[in-house]
Length: 478
Image 1 (tube, rainbow, N blue to C red):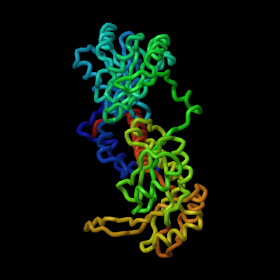
Image 2 (tube, rainbow, N blue to C red):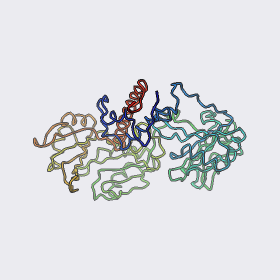
Image 3 (cartoon, rainbow, N blue to C red):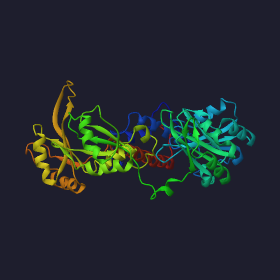
Image 4 (cartoon, helix red, strand yellow):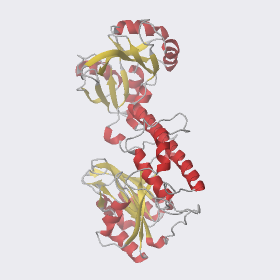
């Protein structure tokens, strides 16, 4: 029985009716799917049916047997670390091939969310070529990052021989850092930490082969001056060992909900009582400001005393540790997002988002009604504009609000009291009341929903493909 292949992005005739109406796929239509997906999947399904490379990576393997894993000689391979987020397999391969190295393959590792783990592996044709690359290319720059080459992964080395070097001058680069320590023993890894813009963060790591070499380096270099700046050299402890013995330290505070006409002098009058202030300023955005203390204990004292406790007029002042964006960009985002988003979530964990408030309801009326659930720290009310699809004019359909309560339990009470209710008008849509969510979380939810829809569709097409293979596909009219 002859099989048929279909090109030009078209689905096979037996599939086209199914894909148009998608019967048998409960709870899912095609309206939410990205444009062009159906044509693309139709083309790939045809590849599956003809036994060629298809949407599901079978590449003609119709036996169902798993592909054997490629075996690489460890002596021919190098571990490569400190890669940028935007460096991929082909980038690695081209980079080293262009510099005269004979590579068999290059691979960047990714997590289950398709985010780069920032390390990978280079596989060479022989051990001598791998050794040559290690000696010549370690600490060179790739996509704005100084790479780290090793014959082993970091976890395979003795952690007691791993040094943390702090308070480095900004002028010291990764090669210079390695040179400072090379007299004490064989260095297997050296990494200078950088911001996203390529500038030094002022610290780095030096991994020696032996603890003896690391000990000598600490004895000779700790508290010595580099370019007139005393550096600190000590054994590096992994995060899990530091947890519980080292508290979070911050000295910078971010202030919100200040009166719009507040000045720096008035800010100083409030915070000077809590300790020595290094600097303070009002932000460009009205109602916001920054205070930097010289000591963490003073900053914590100020945060505990002022946050959600001090009222200026009808505004309750909000205080949180300030995180610089380039510091946040360096921290892992798995789970709940960036450090800035996590900070927001902690600050606004009792924040409520209210939709479909009738036009004409004032802030005072809203607060008077919602205060029945508990003390309110702040309220922000704004119009929700809609653009007409016919003539492009804008009009206000309703209002939305953010209501911050003093405690989570009062926010929960607010949701129970007001969600799906009509406290302001019987002739208006019911209010929708729920906890506020960060934009990053909303985007993540939307992406997950889209991915689940696509997975549903692909699974359905696999089932249809399986049925088609069982019955065979005849030529039209045959």
